[in-house]
Length: 87
Picture 1 (cartoon, one colour):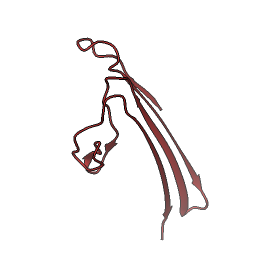
Picture 2 (cartoon, helix red, strand yellow; picture 1 turned 135 degrees about the horizontal axis):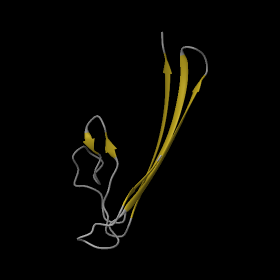
Picture 3 (cartoon, rainbow, N blue to C red; picture 1 turned 90 degrees about the horizontal axis):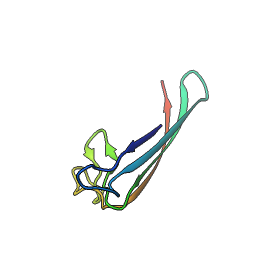
């Protein structure tokens, strides 16, 4: 997955961002599977886009839900690993 936010027309250059995401799932059996995911948000100099936690909202620069938001120009990298077994 690739997502891009263009520069803001009012603010000018340096306000865009890009996000890359990929995920992989492997089924060990009918009831057990493992997943791996990777996401990277790369902000331009004046952009402050940040990852979102779908359960609680924005992760924010404080690492808590509803935080103050990302810092301009910051890059976020997120790795995720999960395993599911159905009894």
